[in-house]
Image (cartoon, rainbow, N blue to C red):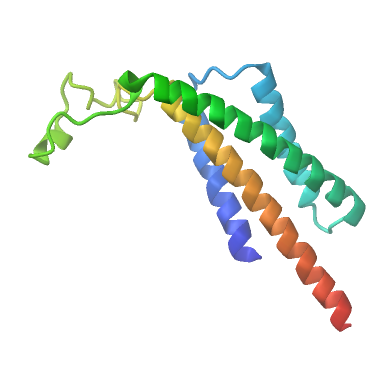
Length: 158
């Protein structure tokens, strides 16, 4: 259970890093509502001590948000596939020194912002963000399932 909780924390840290370092994602109000609702439902579902009825309702609603998030991922994947010019490319694979170049070929860190010039605000980063939200939801649901199973086993053994 603790390992699952640590994985959730790591996913939250990754999502936070994307939000703080690349604020140019253009998510609409529907997307923002899905993200906010998902976070609230995760909190309600994993509240300690566990409230069986409230947690179960939150888990079912979160499962519905998972479907909505997956729909957004499919839409964003189509956009990424339709715009190959956004995908990062390496000019030469013969020389590893090409990877370390800092010039106008796209390897620059975008004026000190910490991300390559070809990435900020792109559909590729938005897709990664959505996939991390999906992972967060899945990990939270798995933790909840494990938690309820452990509680049920404890109740049976008593």
